Image (cartoon, rainbow, N blue to C red; front, side, top):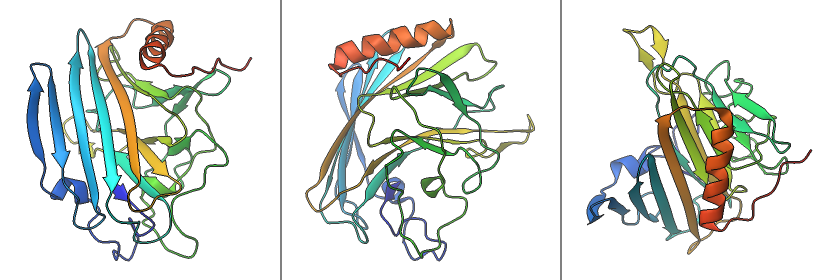
Length: 251
């Protein structure tokens, strides 16, 4: 999704909620292990974007996202990007992360959107919410439902399938990023009588205008699950590779 303060209004006046999906894109092979997904300025919000996907053997995919706003937000100053990942009926639908003290937490809300209890988790308590007071937004929207929990290292993970696999997503920055989870965002698998959870993330700019650019690098790891300590090791390698200033957990 591309989100400004008109996104996902209950009245529907915000326009095309799936604008990036519906506007034309092009896919270009860059190398034997990478492709570039490009999209010119979109008709509603004027966002131009490029996403480079690169396979990193033996079990990772790097995603480098760049976007530029060719016009200011239609309403308000904030602008956001939302990526959705639907997981096919894992035995454990919860999404895990570590808080600022290094303690393991999970998102496993009671319902989709408002009232879910822990639907959107972001790094700073001071981070303002998306949307404007007085407007009525879709009660099922993950963009306007917030958790009281806060993540520390910018990563999240879960255990797809029978719990034997690890899906780990790591980000090269924390403040604009929000971790998002819905227990049924991917719909219902009738055959298994189970919901498909959504393990999503957002990138919210508090001050956006015409010409604003954003950059986000993400690494997705999918491999057989070993142990929880392996996640810390993989994140430490990622921090070293990307040159991030890793903040040690508070004790």
